[in-house]
Image (cartoon, rainbow, N blue to C red; front, side):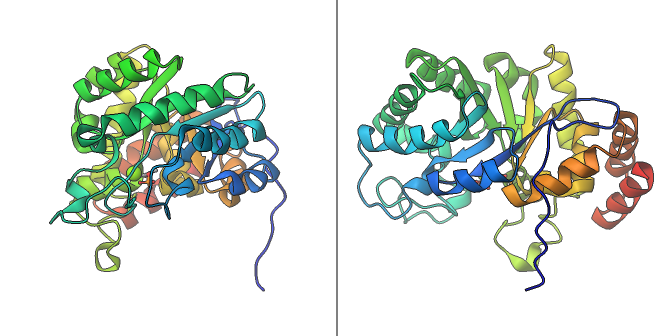
Amino acid sequence: TGVITLPPFEGPGQTRDGHRVLLGANVGAPRDVARAVERGAEGVGLFRTEFCFLDRDTEPSIDEQVGAYREVFDGFAGQRVVVRTLDAGSDKPLPFLTNDDEPNPALGVRGLRTARRHPDVLERQVQAIARAAEGATADVWVMAPMVATAAEARDFVTLARGAGLATVGVMIETPAAGLTAVEVMREVDFVSLGTNDLAQYTMAADRQSGDLADLANPWQPALLRLIGMIGEASRDTSGTPVGVCGEAAADPDLACVLVGLGVTSLSMAARAITRVGARLGDVELVACRRAAEAAVSAADPAEAKAAARAALG
Ligand code: PEP
Ligand code: MG
């Protein structure tokens, strides 16, 4: 009741003047694939692999992982699928991997950091992704979550390339990774901004706290400035691809601002693709850049949004 189903997105994602921005879907498990395809996704910008195994208290076998990953790859023949290695911990605990005795789990051993205690789990997962990618026609990219330093990025790239994966990146979702984006980008083929966590850590505001939602808001000028710095780092490293796969990408006006800040692809819940694609197709790249400039110098999220909308027209 009251739900309006928009027609599927008919790509490609681009501004009115033809600046390409790939619009992908976020998927959590093979069951999400059909919906993403039906909504017109140009591939997958974030495959949250931990969602395949949330209820498990033992590690899934390599064969079982290969099966789950292959199902997703097969849904996107000829398209890009960006696989994220397990982002366990904090808001996504996995009983077989994470400890529940940390006082500050959002600042604790989560994401790539779980490989400090259990390097073998990450090694097996990377092998499983590589095996699933063999023979698949999807263009499989792999990335690690919760990276804070260029050294962590380098270690992950070494591991993933060693397993035979060709295109390797990291998520930028800590301010540390954002502030050292040039050094991080020198290690990788691409980065993807997890704006949910990047907002949480930039604003020091728990993403799960309703009381702090005004602070963890992706329109916060502080967050937008940091994203702008990452966009500059991309230009300074001869065009390292910069995706956004957090909720921010699903807001049509904010999506245009992100493009103006230098973001080159957007990935979102499948249901958002039609609206974001339509908004982007309605504006020129220069307007996105003007909107970005206006938003970063605003005083607060409401002002940033109003200024961006005025600039977008
Ligand atoms: C993010 O942090 O924005 C993100 C895309 O990852 P997740 O929401 O799964 O932490
Ligand atoms: Mg995240």
